Length: 186
Figure 1 (tube, rainbow, N blue to C red):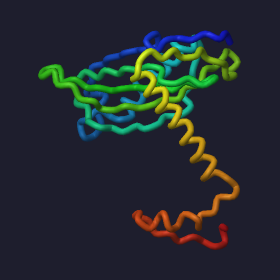
Figure 2 (figure 1 turned 90 degrees about the horizontal axis):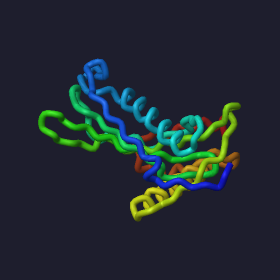
Figure 3 (figure 1 turned 45 degrees about the vertical axis):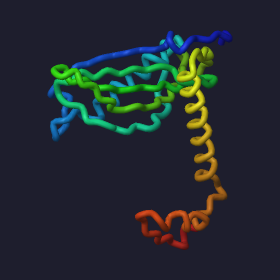
């Protein structure tokens, strides 16, 4: 692909949607699965806008529901590209709800979707680089780099053939777990 770069500002997307009773769960709050669906849609739109191609979700990191969302509130999602690799992009998403009557805004969730650009044959394709213009964008890019590195290290540590569970038993003593390893599985 061409060696082009795009500014973070050029990839930003905002969507807003009124929360309806049909979006609620059994407790009357907006269903987390519905919010995740909207987040996936905005991540796709943002990544596709940056890459100029079809994109698929590769992973979702850090989905912490901070505040519940009520029926009748306006949910606004803001997404931008935080990081780009060769074929992948990390889309940062902020979810806010607004009580239309009081104007009160709550931060409900921030999450990071890793999206991969695809061509018409379903093969990964290179994406444009990212131009970082301010300290916040730089911090977001660096945080994404650290998350990518941590995921790689965790995978290497725990998925390795030489993983020895007994080496971690001391680490588990302060946790609410009872270890009963079957020696035949070692």
